[in-house]
Image (cartoon, rainbow, N blue to C red; front, side, top):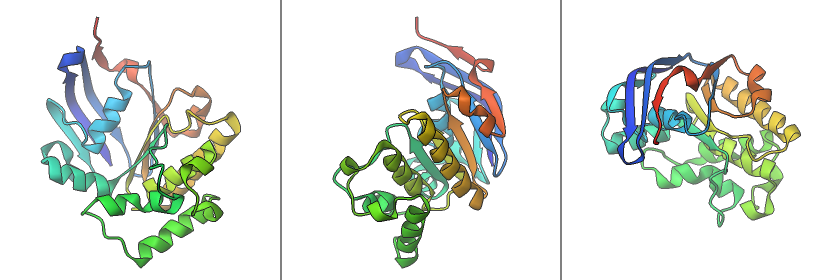
Length: 222
């Protein structure tokens, strides 16, 4: 489902360079990525999502050669194909939980909001245990509830790939396990690949495979 080959990427102004000879993840696989802060783990997720484009090499997601797409095509690809969950939740504070879940459909022309989508949003919310909180704004939700909203938003489009960037970092130990259970169960229902960056080594046994970013070549700023 995900394949990166002979990747070279740099932030010239930051003096950072990353090289990935090969990295792949199968459909339905749960792949964790670990490594020191600043080693390029979030850059990896941005390359897979098409937010960043490598200087050389290829990024393929399913049948799509992401690195060959123009800006608009990459945005449309991201809306249809990638579900993203972040440590800071990424919620819009003035929107209700329901509208946060539906938000991708309101900002992307690649998605069509219809009755079936609204019903799926409701169903996901009840499955996530926040059905009764759909009318609440983020300020009235706990950290765990905010992350449940973010997971529902990420999975609403039934994406084949879910990218999680320290998605449990702001949560207490008990809630971390609950959130990971929710993410994995919802992803499994769609046979989605989960690519997760984490510093929490206590969670690694929950994944099918772990990639240590120290195995890739990085050049750091002095």
